[in-house]
Image 1: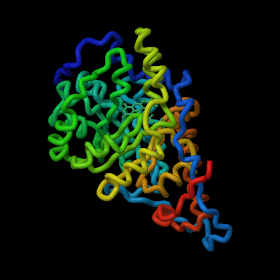
Image 2: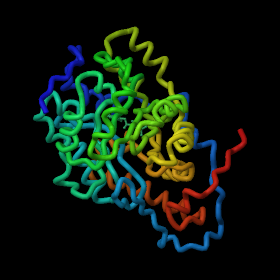
Image 3: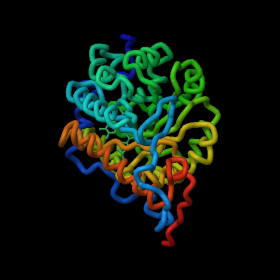
Image 4: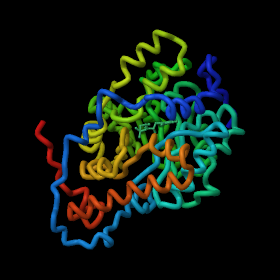
Length: 354
Ligand SMILES: Cc1cc2nc3c(=O)[nH]c(=O)nc-3n(C[C@H](O)[C@H](O)[C@H](O)COP(=O)(O)O)c2cc1C
C-alpha cells in the first residue's frame, strides 16, 4: 500500500488539493455558462390519464448486483483530508438511509499516505451501500498497477471501481499528470484482473463517439458519461494554478467537451448493449434524471448538488436532496403512465423544434 507514486514534485501539496477543490466548488462560479446538458431539447409525452396509482410506482433498480430504491448515485467527489472524510461519511449515511448508490473521490492519496484511508472509510456507517471506488486512469502511467488498485478496493470495501479519465483537468492542473500515451492498452491489460466491476468515467467533459469507439473493446463493466452541462474541471483548476498561461487556457476551455445528453446517446449506441451506462454531468433535477433513463441510462449520478447540501445542511439536507429527486422521478413516472423504471425507459422523448 505504500508504493511511491512517480508523478514528480508538485508545487501545491497533495494534502491541500482535495480541500482546495471542495472550497473552490463551494465558493466560485465553476459550472458551465455557455453550454447545457442538452436535455432541455427533449420532452416526454404527457399522459393525462395514466391509469396508475402513484403510490404503486416502483423505482427499484438492480445494478452491479445490488437493488437500489431508485436509480440514483451520489457522484465521485472526495476523500483524503479530515473535511473530505466528514463529507464522505455524511453522504454515505444519507445514501444508505435513502437506498441509493455513492461513489468515493480519487483514492490516490491512500497509496501515498495510507493513514488517510479513514477519510474514505464509510462501511461502518453504510454497510449495504452500493459503493464505487476511484482512481485516475492516467495513474497507470505513474506507478499504479494491479496490486495498488486491489489495495484501494479492499481498503474501502467497494462494490465496483472507477477509473476516472480527465485529460483536460490534468492539463490545467499545476501539478497535472499529462502523459496519457498508452493508457488504453494499460486499461485493457489491468481490467480483467480487477476483482470488482470496473467503470470508466469522465469528470465533466464527456465521452465522444470517437473515444467510445477507441475503448468499446475493453472489458469494462460500466461507463459514466460525466458530460458537459455542470461542474467544469477546466474552470476549477484555473483557481489553483499560479500560471497565467494555464489560467487563460482553462478559462477559454471552460465549456469544452460533449454535452451530457449527446455523450449518453453515444454511450448507449456504442457500449450500452453489454455495459451499464451511468449518466452524469450537470444533472440537477429529477426531470433530467427521467430523460436520461428514457434515453437508455441504467443509473443517473449527480455530484455538486450533494456537496452543497452536505456543506450547507449536513445529513438532513443530503437526505432531502435525494428524496426530492426520488419524488420528482416518481411523479414523472406517474404522468407518463410508467409503472416502473423499465416502463420509463421505454417512453419516447420528443425533440422540441428549435
Ligand atoms: C468537489 C468535487 C470533487 C470531485 N472529485 C472527483 C474525483 O476525485 N474523481 C472523479 O472521478 N470525479 C470527481 N469529481 C467529478 C464528479 O464525479 C462529476 O463527474 C462531475 O462533477 C460532473 O458532475 P456534476 O455536474 O453533477 O458535478 C468531483 C466533483 C466535485 C464537485
